[in-house]
Length: 107
Image: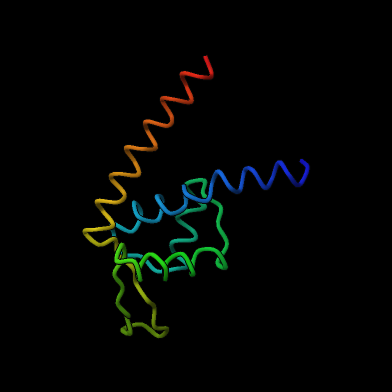
């Protein structure tokens, strides 16, 4: 595939990773584990994209976090906040409306 094709695909997928993170983090998760979950669900993301996204969503109040120091390696666990759940619900509704609109124009 040529470079411009990949660029457009990346732009399309960018917002989907935000929604996928908000949905997956309804159960607490840490960065590397989230990377694996995202990949398992078809949302290939690299750490250089994910960690700034998690920090941004936390700063905006859509995620909360706490450190788990009970293991040999401390991990920061993230969880979708109530505001994040409302955002995820809204984005998911928008996603379904867009999918319906695409289906209508693709007929």
